[in-house]
Image (cartoon, rainbow, N blue to C red; front, side):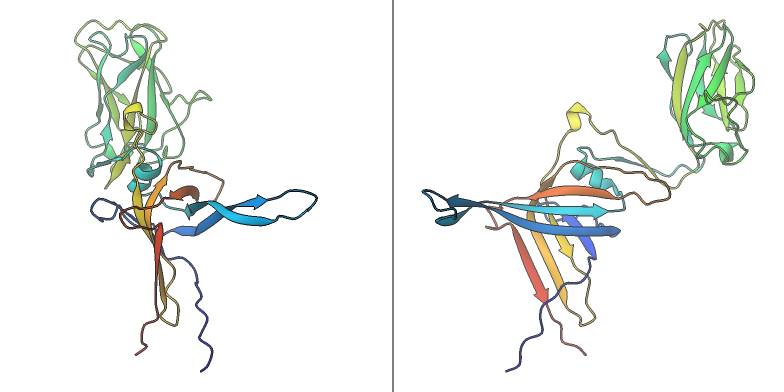
Length: 296
């Protein structure tokens, strides 16, 4: 009888976390830089006397771990590794702006200040993604500041006026019940019903999303939402040219920590360490399946 062909693994195809309660999948990681599963054992040695070597050794605790390296950030990785599930928003064909809220002082968003921020009619193509700060310049005027240049040229080009990130060339006048345009940004600020009485230096903030087909929001670190659910995971190696398939089913996993690295001209790669725990119901830590299909 000839020697068998060695069983070998090549590459990594997918990692699919699933809910341990019902087996449904959170989703699938496809843009993977790598993944490794390790069993590391503590060896407890017996030493004594003048012998420089161990008399005996027994296996102590065994740690089972998996390291995931991926270059995609689907919603479920925030749920599993950052402690909070994102909110998936519906498409916004004409964009959106959050309600303006006072940041410093109370005079900017008030009946005698700005009542609302709104999208300028037929100018939604000029909306630019980012954070906006409105600062009272005097009793009736404000300056507007913007967080980044990353989207500033969407639609009509916006311009940073100075190093403080001001985008209004001259202060905007807030008038009772009237809307004033934030030039080239697709936004309007509408004054309240009372006599305008801003306090210089007071400020308010809001955020904007441009026209979109999808968006999500998540807050990491909320006290009420720091939950890291246990999950299972199916890890698949690449299908070999021989047709061989190799699968690992990690039965009970838990991980926490989601680094988001941003480097110049490079894809962001997250490396997450996951603990593999003993599953009492299934009496194991992980299962392996391998198949060599019959070739047609």
